Length: 97
View 1 (tube, helix red, strand yellow):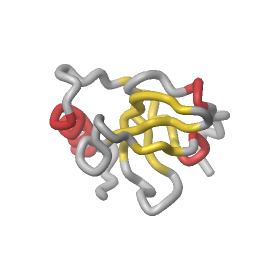
View 2: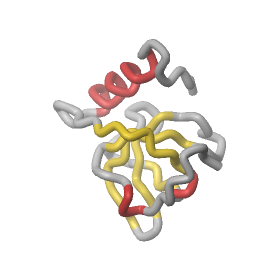
View 3: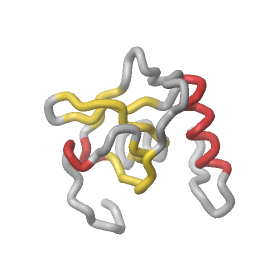
View 4: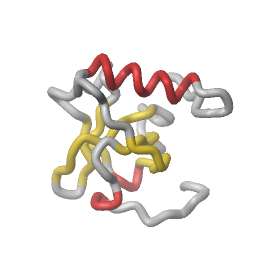
């Protein structure tokens, strides 16, 4: 599933950790983790899944990208901006939704 074969659990996701969807119709989408529910990780992208209604994902279907991002204002617009920054990085993540 992933190259780094790190055992992913709900607890291995720090708050505002950058992750990528590995499965489902949103495969390849970048998200920020904003919370937890039993057996699920709550993620947002600021556009389709906003802070008011985060998406619940199975942690097995997410790849940790090793970056923690703290939105300055804690708004959906700020989250979109941060995610676009990572997509635009040279040699970085170029997956588009």
